Length: 235
Image (cartoon, rainbow, N blue to C red; front, side, top):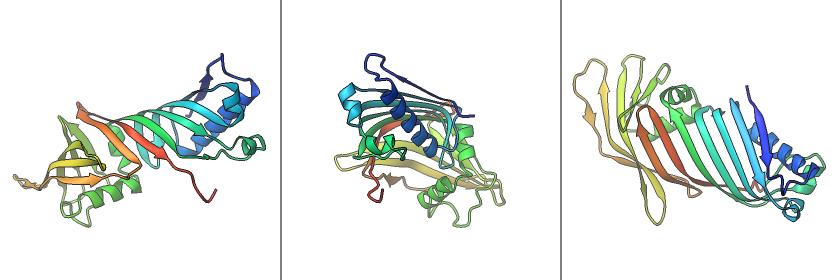
């Protein structure tokens, strides 16, 4: 069940205009997620800013959200300098961004969230690409599970032959880009007592995404960083 609420600063809220913008943003958020247990929205702006379709700050918090098949236990987003197509919104048309929007985010996932996300083609494709040369090309992820032990992520496949893959997770940043480092990946096939260790490898991220921190501890994966929502030129 999705519950949507919104709050805006009563000192700057301007009645119907604030309500229209809030409803438009809520509708857009609904279109972005498949489901969410709770989804809250807060935004602020002075009257002259809202009349121009400008929102200086939007905060979004969600619990038990599903985005493109990925299960996210907790999500907190803060977007700044948001410019919307206010005139078209007032005519009943969908919300559209008029310029790229910087977003700060913090996401928390637990073991069962990661396991549930394995049904997502997006995550399955990422796993196959990321661990190419480590996992078999025809690996069957049906019924697989993910566990978090210490600072390492463990993937267990159930289809014979079963595999146990483990890897450390670390964020490396330089002046050009941010990368997620897979530290000493190890693979063991079911029935074997020893594992094979592979060199650490880097996963480059899109230029619009920056991961500032990533921790894996006691069954919980936390990451924080920033991204940029881009404008669809075809809209």
